[in-house]
Amino acid sequence: MISVSDFLNWKSDPVTKAFFQAAQERVEECKDILSTSAGNDTLYDRFLVGMIHAYRELQEFRVEDFD
Image: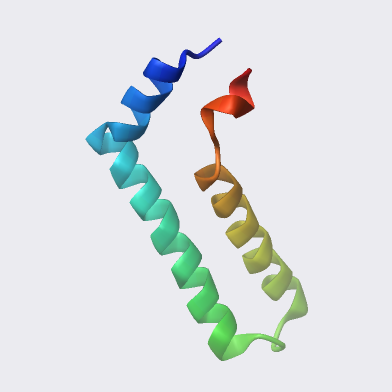
């Protein structure tokens, strides 16, 4: 089990913050691609939507998720 203190320390670590910033940048990149090319390739559209969903789910982890 992960303690609340360990989780908060991890969330405040510079490497963790950089990782979450990179994840957010990937979300924005996917949204940009979709905004200019959605409908051209529906399979690729769904791939990008899945990527956005996965990165957002990762960003929403809370310490309560580990209890």
